[in-house]
Length: 258
Image (cartoon, one colour):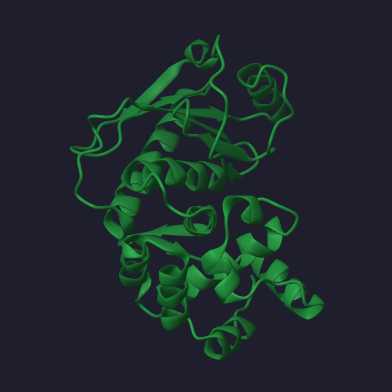
């Protein structure tokens, strides 16, 4: 579930070989072509879900800039891990799959999601693409935090409700072991750090901090303030002003995983 910052442009894309099952064409929004060898019923379900994700991400996080002028994003969905692996191997010309779950490749404008494992992979990876079109330089920790929110979320009348998930276990284990990054380190982190040796810890802290902000009604305001923060120092000030460590960890201690 990596949002890839850099991938070399490769030829002979297998994307066109996948059947088109739907499109997202919301006015002013990112255009999305949805592909996959899916039954009609499953295709309708996943196209509807993708539209719900686009609407929710737009409402919560995006500006009013017109993304429809950009080339469409290709959303490639797979029900079987073997098909997913074969597609990724062809897309990356034999390179090892970066994740068994999915990824977003901004260079090709391709989202790949293994929905056979979880439809949360669609929600997570599509969120990356939508965020990228609105904020191409979004910090790695922040796009992964938002994507991870959508990875475990319940669709309700007013949109998605973000739920505690397995990353809370990662947070607690890393905190106990003394390997959890600080909130300052999170705010100042680079993509290399986020996707490096402590990837689970960074993902866990990013998701939990955004979940905390959402629970306290300050997620959008903090996200917008981070967008306006052009330096690591400024991002650190924004995050530390919105998430006080003592209160945050007391809150995470009280979360219950179901």
